[in-house]
Image (cartoon, rainbow, N blue to C red):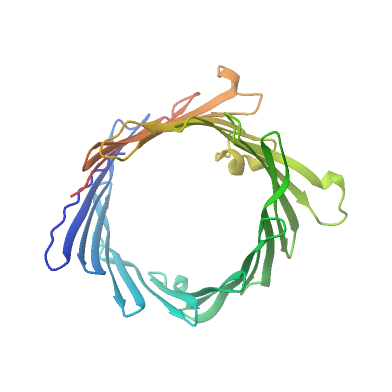
Length: 362
């Protein structure tokens, strides 16, 4: 991927102008090099108001143009955007939003009209606090035709006696009425000894067809290395409840070396949980390293390398079941120019891919 961006400012009566130009180039095992995306963004600001144009080309086809603007109206924030496909003169979407305060409530409203009218909707949300309890509610309505789609009511608070964070959230929809009730707790301290702090978190979800308890044990240390380790588990609380319902399905952790280098690991004990533990459903184990790189102008560069492993028996010819390596880095070359590179490299067969990114601001 290659992205080129530019940004410049013009000052006059609080008038500013800036922009971004980006180009994406990918190289794969089957394609030597291809220009897959090009974008241009221009922003005109006047005080607290702004107007923006974003043009996107995919495979050299001008397929998306977005025109948007935002401005305050007293204490009300307004925002609107219009998107269409210039190559086909096809309308894609129109979205308008409003945000304001009413009786100490933060209220937001979003209306989104899509080319498929039956997918268009409006959603209103309100959030606030009552004593030590924070709450949020939302309702989503279809607008063509006007009908109820879904709503949620959530509350959160601190359990001060145990320094734990608590939350409860109920969801409803037009298909089944009550959909689920989820209660969660994080940061419940279990013990602290020899520089090790162990805490417990859990979430229990009640729905029409299942009841699942997901516990998490987190271990933090003030040792030189591993500062955060989590055990991931799940309990099916559908009757009968037995110890056979309890299972630990994964472990995750990070180990810091100094201020700039971090080792990370993740191990899934259940192939069905690979995606949530390692981030990739085909691999049960991940080892990674990330850190900072020298970079220009006060912006720290960064790099990350990850190795993913397949569960035995792995394909022949792979070392310890190593199936995939991913690598990326991002650095600021000059004040208005940065460069990034990302790649994926399977150890068996083809399918590798490189992506380059250049950014220039004006």
